[in-house]
Structures are given as C-alpha cells and as structure tokens.
Amino acid sequence: MKPVTAGQALVELLADHGVDTVFGIPGTHSIELYRGLASERIRHISPRHEQGGGFMADGYARASGRPGVCFVITGPGVTNLATPMAGAYIDSVPMLVISPVNPPDPHGINRGRLHELSSQEAVSRPFCADSVTVESADQIPEAVNRAFSLFASQRPRPVHINIPLPVLVEPVGEPWHALSCTTAMAKVSDRLVAEAARKIGRARHKVLVVGGGTVDGQSDILALAERMNCPVITTVAARGVIPAGHPLSVGAQLRAPRIQKVLQEADLALFLGTDFAQTDHWNDDMPLPCEQIWVNLSPDSMDSRTSALTAVGDCLHFARKLHALLPEPSREAVDRCRMQCLDLRTGRAESMTDKEKMHWAVLEIIDSHLQKGMLVASDMTQSAYTAVDYLPAYRPRQWLHPVGYGPLGYALPAAIGALLSDAADTALAIVGDAGFQYTQQEMGLAAELGLNLTVLLWNNHALQQICDDMDSAGIEPVGVVQKNPDFLALAEAYGWRAWKNVDITSLESELAKASETPGPVLIEIDESLVRTQSGQSGNRR
Image 1 (cartoon, one colour):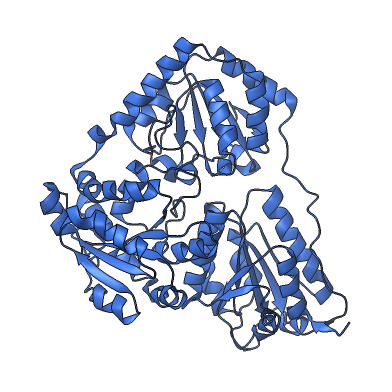
Image 2 (tube, rainbow, N blue to C red):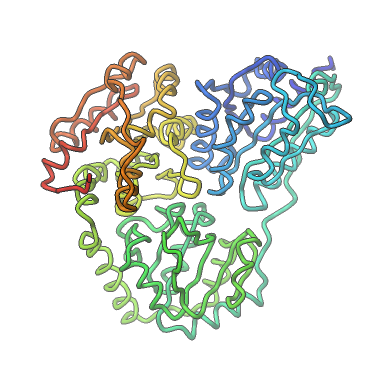
C-alpha cells in the first residue's frame, strides 16, 4: 500500500467511526487534513466563522445523537471555537475537535510562530472531557478511539485532539481502523435498584424529574412514569421525552411556581439523567422532597447529594430494572394522578405575565408546525424564554436551546447543523435582533446549501432582557440599544426570501409558505406590532 500522511489516515479513521460531516474553515496549518477530505467519504461544511461552525456541530449532535466534528486551525481557530465547546460541555453535547498545533518548544516558551499559543491544550481543557496533544502519528488512532469510547460510555462532552504540524505529515503505511467500543456505561447495582423500589413503594406523593440523559429512551421513561403513576417534570434538555399532552405531563414550564410547588410538596422525587442545575429552574434555594433518588452518569453531580440515594450509571438501564420491580397502580390511583396533571397543564396560562402573553400570541401559531415534526432552535432571547417555558414539544431532540452556557448567536448555525444531520426536513430558528447579529453571516452558508430553514426574527430594537434587568436594578440603561441593519435587505443580499410580518393572524400562512417553498426564509416580527395586536402592554420599560 502506498503510504499516506497522518492527516489523510485520520480522515479515513473518522469515516470508519461513522463520521459523515466535518465543520471547518481550512487554513495554512490544517491543509494536510484536507488532503484526506478529497476522497469525499466525509462531507465538509464551511461556515463563515469558526464559532458558527462550532454551533453547527452542536446542533448536528443534539438533533442526531451523533458527535459533531470540527476541524479548526491553530491558535485563533481554537479560541474562536471556545464558546461553542463550552456550551456543549455544560449541556452534555458530544463534539470532537481536531486542530493542528505548532511544534512544542522544549523550554515551553513562544517562538513567534504563526497562530502560536503557549498551550492550546490548556485553552480547551476546562470545557472538554479530554484535551490531549499527540506526540507521534501512531498515537492518533488511540486518541480518536478513546474519544468515541468516552462518547459511548460517559456523560457526552467535547474532546479536543491537538496534532503537531510535523506529525500531520508523517507517513502512515497501514490504514487505521475504528476499534469496537468495549467500554459500556456503568450499570446501577441490583441492590440500589431494589432500594429505590422500596422507597418509591412507601411514597404517597411521588414525582419524576427527567433530564437530557433520557432523550434516547422515551419508551423506557414513559413505561416507568406510568408504573410510578406520578407527575413527570422535564428539564429543557429533556423536552419531548414526555410528549405534549401525555396524561402524566405537567407541561413545559419547570420554572413556574405552580410546577415547583408540585416538586416541593412531594414526599419523594426521582431524578434521572439530570443535574437539575440552577439554569433548569432559576431558583437558588429550591426546596426538594426529603426523600430523593438521583441516577446520573456524572459522579461530580452526586457530591452534594449526601442525604439522598445516589447511583452513578446508565439511567435508562436503571429505569428498565426499576419498572420491573414496581407493582401496577390501581385504576383509581391512575385517574386521580392524571386529573392532577391535567389541572397543571390547563392552568399554565394563569401564570403568564403580560410580556409572556404577548410572546404567546406568536408562539401559539408555531405549535401546529411542531406537531408536523418541524425542528426548532432558539437563541437566548425573551420570546425564546417564553417558548421554552410554555410551547409543547412532541418528540425528543425536537427543540435545541443553549440552556446552560447561554451564548448569543446559537440558533441560526445550530439549525443549519441539525438539518445537515438529516434529523429533520425543515427547521425554525427563533432569534432576537441583537443576538442574531452574532452569527448572521451564516445566512450565506444556508443559501449556498439551499436549506429549508426559516428564521423568525423578533425585533425589539434592543438587548431588551438586559435593558429590563438594568431597569429592575435601578440602573439607567446603557449600551443596550444599537442601530440595526435592514434585516430584509440583508437577507435578500444573501439570497434569502424575506418579508416583514404586519399581521400576526397571517403568520400561520406565512410559516406554511416558508416551510413548503425550498430554500431559506427570514420573517421579521416587530414587537411593538405584536404588543398592539395582542392587546398586551408588554413590559418594555
């Protein structure tokens, strides 16, 4: 066999692992990776900025469950990708980042080379499950195989592999192959499952809380919920695991006081696949039931649960084993529990603020498109916060939201990545006018690829959430109002169709038209118009 370079062999190894898409921008130091991409076994996607590429890899992974893969250049490529990697780390998203790196100096000092950092590995280590620098070509397959083993057996998070420039061009005689993953997720012991079953059997008012670790086990979670016969609360990452309208669903809004009250008044709560972080419920002093059971892949999340029954392991395996030990509930108990959950779902409108009701006038229209399978990616913007709280989800991985790290500019590139994963035929990105401008350049890629993507741009002409926060804190708003571009002209310049919604009653037909006509579409909604037509005062301040 004719020798190939390590860069070529690496690409073939990724293909052997099932990688079909790589997001990246080629640069002087990474071209050896692109020699391997010429074989066309892997599709290469060129974002307009590495940050956009990182969010695309995130969206690809969240929508499909497969790792998103990025190639980035030394130095600025790595630092530009830092924000998406950190977001993926917080939200448990599998991402593989491969970058060249300047040859290490034996004295650990910079030599003034192009794109030089004193330690690329140190840059990414705080937000990676593993960040390594290989020393020779023969270490590359080991590093890649270890990354895929981590994705399969541990809490999924980014892995970063640095390859020194001289190593990328080393000759490789024999092809590298993916190793079968022999490391499985840890299993919870039968003893702990039995103890959990005894605790649940004694409880009179139970509640089940499910997080992102359950998204690939909807049938297991539904079966357990029905056997436990209790209200089910989902975090943002788990939206859709309990489909909208399921008799045991309490609705989407975990942050609502009425939903938190259900949890607080329970005598036992079972937490599966979630850290139940502050960004899940926005309550720094959340009271929890005296009896708690926690099952999670991450041992770090168990450290503070000293008074609870905790188990590090596969929460879906635990759910199946627990289901087998629990008795069938009585018909009377089932009817009583389902009536309680129905009351909680139907009462959600009572807790809406005026501003949320204004958002709901638009968001309610989106619901019919969600029922048809449309995937939604949302940015950190006020209308999306209301959507995350109230808008139903009908299947897991249908709604992508950067809940933990909360970066602006996520929705557009994440929606692009999700569509490229083939997890959905159409996608909707919900963005605000300020956050959209972080990654609006990725409109060029969406047009280039002809994606069936609709951007719903909510324009309130400000960083409105920060403006409201400043006002609440008694601070005169500073730096929260900017001059926006003409978004319609900008979209048309990128080759998109674009229009401004002037009547919210016509939005249903506009969204239908956008989703039925090939190619990307931008629909701009002016908040002042919605406020007037919905009859709400908002709270613009």
